[in-house]
Amino acid sequence: MATSETVHTLDKDGKHITTVGFQRFGFDSEVSLEALRSLYLRAHYVKTSTSTSSLKNLDGEDDTNDYLSKSIFHPDTGSISYTTLSRFPPVKLLPVSQRKRILVTGGAGFVGSHLVDRLMLLGHEVTVLDNFFTGSKTTVSHWVGHPNFEMVRHDVVEPFMIECDQIYHLACPASPPHYQYNAVKTIKTSFMGTLNMLGLAKRTKARFLITSTSEVYGDPEVHPQPEDYWGHVNPIGPRACYDEGKRVAETLTYGFHRQDGVDVRVVRIFNTYGPRMNPFDGRVVSNFIVQALKGEDMTVYGDGKQTRSFQYIHDLIDGMIALMNSDETRPVNIGNGDEFTIGEFAELVREIVEKVRKEDGEEPRKVNIVYKPIPTDDPQKRRPDTTRAKEVLDWQPRWTVRMGLEEMVRYYKSKMSEGSL
Ligand SMILES: O=C(O)[C@H]1O[C@H](OP(=O)(O)OP(=O)(O)OC[C@H]2O[C@@H](n3ccc(=O)[nH]c3=O)[C@H](O)[C@@H]2O)[C@H](O)[C@@H](O)[C@@H]1O
Image (cartoon, rainbow, N blue to C red; front, top):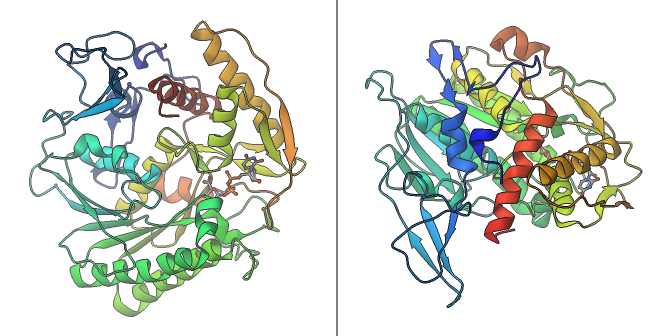
């Protein structure tokens, strides 16, 4: 299996990516890619036959230097031992004057956990709030016990009090099958959760960033979508609980800003993928990779001519941290402008999965692409206009879709070999 050390990652200009983040607005967010990868790309499980005295990872290497907590599977008894290690990855030692107390709601989700990793490595104090409806404790378990880290099971529809300097408000199911599973709860989370967190920001004078979405543009009639486009949303359709929920959350945010002077930031996130994305959450990237890895048919909905533009998780986190620490209070799109039809994207994923399998010495295999009915109100096209992010944040995506997909395929492969996928 390819390890993180053998992976060469090139950016859009063909230059090696060795770090993510940057120094912007007096806030240094740069960390080494290797340090981040050690938190998600290495095998989490170790297997043992009878003895636990020597810990080996799935590649047979001595695992004692890993920072991850361990889950040791005993095939003979069908049992599993969990070990919490008190060793953590080194974090920056910040002077107290620079160390921020940061609240991340939804911090155990896919995007939240990557934000938490970055903020922890940078030396800040991080509190995660999550109700674990779609998030999972395992995404941030490697920080549990660290003196800078705290995890609280809490649903943001109920008020929460804490002293903090910055609030990243992410909490909300984001995958269409998840947010449609309980539509009333989704819109309640968007409205009540945002109301509660804005109330907290007002009381503590913390800066407040909300993760909004490209879905506020609905099925857009303007392409690509700039921030001043008001959108084309069906207010009573099955997606409305999410897109109208996020629209009202933005309205609340600007209400508190104008009325109470709350210092707000609004990021509109376009389709994002990466390691720790729930493999069963039904989104296109996770579905296609898992289907291709398992040799199952890849399911394209509709005729596959609808488009999406996919950004890698590290670019998104760079943009979110830059926005939080900038002076920009208007909404800012963060996304990658490389647009694909879903049909083209299926072929690209199939090709990349085969490339990674070949590198690992596996037999070639051809998976089929099949067509299924298109979901109601599925947007026909989506691509961000990121002019504002470039102008006000000096932010641009660095990761090519191919590089990000290769890393995500390796991540899911390691999950498969652990038996957790
Ligand atoms: O991934 C995201 O970042 C976005 O995901 C969803 O938006 P959507 O664009 O519908 O995302 P997917 O469910 O991944 O679907 C993308 C396209 O692929 C299609 N699809 C999905 C799954 C599949 O197996 N096959 C397939 O063709 C869908 O019909 C859709 O046209 C969420 O609603 C957004 O909030 C979120 O930002």
